[in-house]
Structures are given as structure tokens and as C-alpha cells.
Length: 110
Image (cartoon, rainbow, N blue to C red; front, side, top):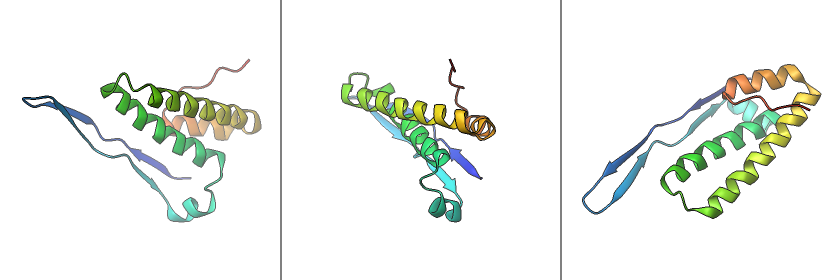
């Protein structure tokens, strides 16, 4: 499984009347064959939630009082956490590989 995530840096530049944001978009490169075949797999869903989480986090760094986006971020975090818990119960090896590829923390198990 080849997942590659390139994250652009956010540059905040100051103009005379305010701030504006220039950001590079998230680029996800997944082989077309896997993209079409395994769109419903747990790994693909966790990958897509992770890109959404990173995008929302960068948005919230600039817009601290955007409470509806904060709520959406918490919902997506919960969905990803439940999927990761399911994957860790079903196949611990795939879970370890996925969290190392996406560079996310391991969930606490009870």
C-alpha cells in the first residue's frame, strides 16, 4: 500500500490593512488502482480523515473563533479514533503500519 502525503507550509504575510494567508494545498498521491478498489477500506478512510484534520487544524490556527469548524474537527477526530480502535482490534500489524505512515499517535487501549 503506497500512501504519500505532502503537506504544504502556511505562510502568513502582513499587508497594510490586515493579514492574508497563502497556503499550499494538501496533495495526496495514491495509486489509481488502489484508489478505485479500496475506497471503503479502513486505511483509506483513516487517511482521508487525517487529511481533513490537518486541513482544519491549519484553518483554525488562523480563525481561532470559528466554533463550527472546531465542532466539525472534533467529530472527525472521533470518527478516526473509532476506526483506529477497530483496526487495532482486528489487525494490530496493519494498525501499526498505518499510524507510522501517517505519523499519528497511537490510541490508548483499555
